Length: 501
Image 1 (tube, one colour):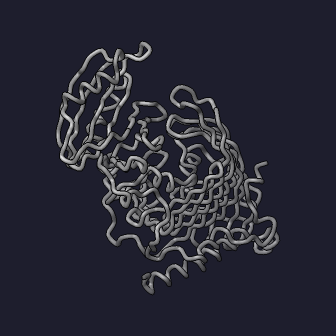
Image 2: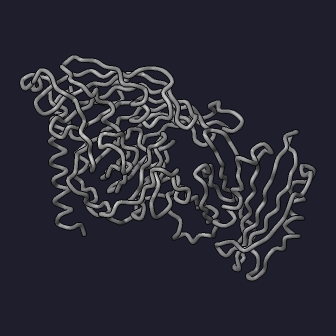
Image 3: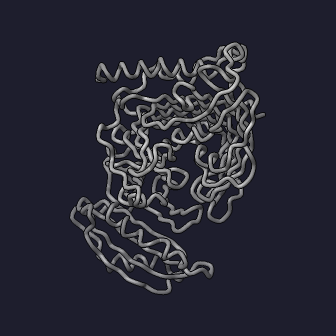
């Protein structure tokens, strides 16, 4: 049960956030009455914030028959989605950094992280496991990286936590100087990358206009078009928005954006053409509610911790799971077959096909010789040489047979790494890695990671992000939804994807 202090903190957050939202979206007539002429916009360094983001998306997903061979759209599916992220975050800087320096890391506790979507008439829901609510956000490079200090996210959970707008850097949209109503300024490319979580902005511009200066707040309107990229995948965005700078808190406390985004098909994910409405409320906090009192260890002078950057991949159909580098994605999971693909900045490195094998009598195992014979028979004339074969017992207690062979397909040199996993109960699965000879260095022995981490799962161990009957400390109540979806008081306060048409 939430403590009395936690409940009181939540109520205070709700009351303050509603007041902020009301001030930020005040009607033009009220703003004119309390106008102060000019205002100095100087965002103060913050340490602890409560944030709520609500996103509504509608549009189409575009897929190709084979993204590795061609990115040409072959099918289009309608999609709608509603997502909510509600969290508190503690900003982190290197020990020798000035208080005014850019925030390059944050520690978060997610009170709510959920998504409901309908893709081609198929409904799905996703939620964040309670054990994954504490997370670290790193922003030394973009898009930002999120990892758990204690556990491992699934790819579905990582996708759930990816926000198209960063609460850490939203103050970078502010002009940082004295303004009067009617002032206009262009937002620079670095700020756009930081706030919109883009790897690069290649062309276009976004302009901000001061539309109201009041005693307690300054209001802005944003509008523009840009082309950029995210991890090597091209994207085009058209956006309009509203933003409020709270003159008492000296920070941006309200941001609403309507975005039309067209993203290219990548080798790891489909493309899309969607319109999204994003609403964000931020408020400084005096003390954390659910974040651990002791700050998580962050070594700013070191690369991201490799031991924390694995992702948990699970096949519900095959009832197996593994921990792999984040370059790996579960591309498909169907009865009798699951496919993982290794993608690095939209470059395909390797593919791994998983398929179940007939269960053996309990206590029986295949020999390495029998597996090698099966490999030769499967590849036939494609095989040119057997490189090596070995067997061992994995860290998960499974017997692992491994055969590495070289061959050709349509004149292209190929390496196959075939692995046979079995346990004492007779359960078996085969993994087949396929990669071209020129990708061996980039592949970097990922088969060894699969060999030691693959395990058979009981149905109860499979988590696909569906909401569970669990409550978090100071979790969102029904009233929390009013923060970002408060009914507008007049037509000037509405903002939706229709504004982009």
